[in-house]
Length: 277
Image 1: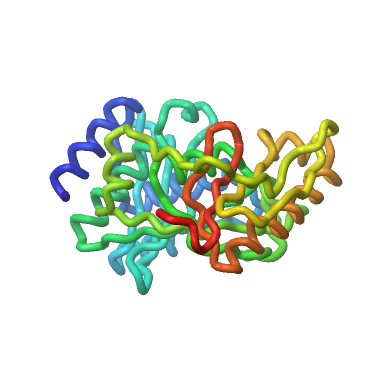
Image 2: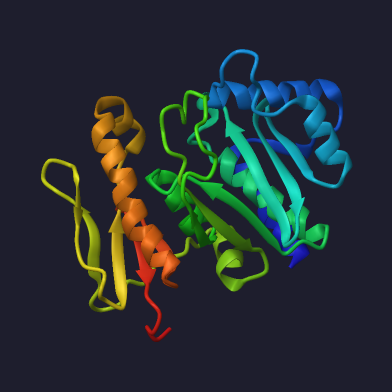
């Protein structure tokens, strides 16, 4: 498994045109902290993570890496050791490097690194309303949602999250599972909605959320195609979607339902307890 993960990580890095390596020296850590701030854009004087903290995390056995293209750092990621493995706390990819699969290369490096160090589970959080991130995490990587966290970080001041309630999905990435191994070989996880799913949340013709049914064995929960654009153009609609997804997806998960995947066209596939698997 370790050898296969190492080969998959190298293939992903080659395909993305990047070189991923651990960061230990202060100059590299300074560059990584600055890159993360350029991506998330916190207020001046309030960095999201400092070089000193990254130095401590790495020295204590955590995961601190950068991805380089032509000797220029284009992505960085920091993960902390956790009770059940590794928690991938923060990552950033420079705008000009997005679309080149640098983020995918980072995650496959993280998997290979973790397995090498005897870690078989990685967890992280993401905003459940960002469709492209949901597809990346659940389909391309094969991670599985474990918990819906309401307003997890509270009010945040960076430009990406300012003014937003910070609901998050905590996912578990079980590195040795067949689902994850297949995803890391390029076979994305395809969610099975079964023969007769019900729609728990959909969009009205005006783009606002429309509550549906929650009584099926499989429930589909839609999120906006581009939540970030909606936040800028119609903040009230974005807030309405935030609460609708919380009340639907969050309630289903709190009641014991499992999110089994995310379809490329914008649906979470949720199995209620009792469906045959």
